[in-house]
Length: 413
Image 1 (cartoon, helix red, strand yellow):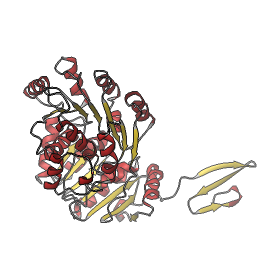
Image 2 (cartoon, rainbow, N blue to C red):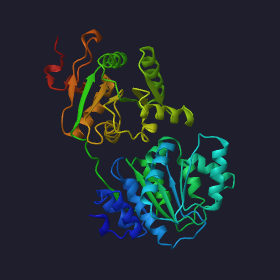
Image 3 (cartoon, rainbow, N blue to C red):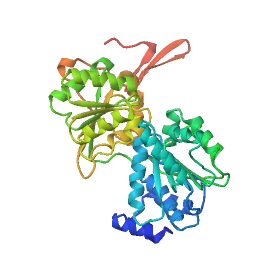
Image 4 (tube, rainbow, N blue to C red):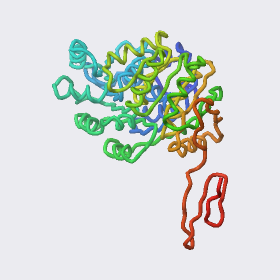
């Protein structure tokens, strides 16, 4: 479907034309008409599917049509991180280029008092759209700086990430300050039970739009090392010596592991920066600026802050650990092979993570190439399914991937 076939107003369509946006993505095609029709909505879609435009375009169009109060907050968009809030704001500046009467403000923590004072002033004047992280907006609510009594749209972007970061109660508290007749729009990459519970508490008869996880771009060369945990840093060091780490991102699911990798790389004289939630916002901003300007060759990051990383010249992504969700794997390796470039993704798989990587391979419907460990690192574990023991008729049977040992006895090697 083309954007001009939707009911978006002419000012929005003109901006899309200037940006050379012609065709809707699948999630935009399904969500835009439903949001314009005032439905509450749950969208299940990964990052990179166009979900920001899927809710921003219809909301901007409706506000620009002039049926909402002036000098009041008409829309609140919740974001898990400052980086994503800034990304949403940048998208809004483009889509809203011809919307003279629609104002916005981003509200997030990790900055100085003057920024807080500026936020307070803008919130009291009544920006049409407030893009905020939960903790910071709740702070303004408690200080009496913001009136949400006329909000018509409440958007939760990356709701699963917000819950992972412990914002469940904050979101409910913010929602309790909204009028009863507002429209709620929720997007999440996954739908665990806690998200279902949140949706049940916040949404009224929502329509559900589910977009299947798209597979990684074919031009990403996917590879893996099967290794023991204590071999991983040696593999990273070996990749550095070969020159492979230039313009690379190393992902880990745990911030303590990010710190450990960072220290190890510094000891090996590797020019790198780290991104995790223990850093101040100023430190995170400085790290991103240095990485984007090529002052750092390598960035080590957790998944939470990785959502704001939007850089086109990444040559290599390393999964230091195997993501538990396929969506996280696809998102991580999607940081490379952007803007018509080629890219490479390497995953380090220890024996405990084999079962999770098998799920990823099952989703991709292919076996990812397993690289041989460098000789000086030693041998790693076998890439086999976890052995299962079953007792049958008083005897024990052993099962392993590709082999069956009969008679209840394990073969001698």
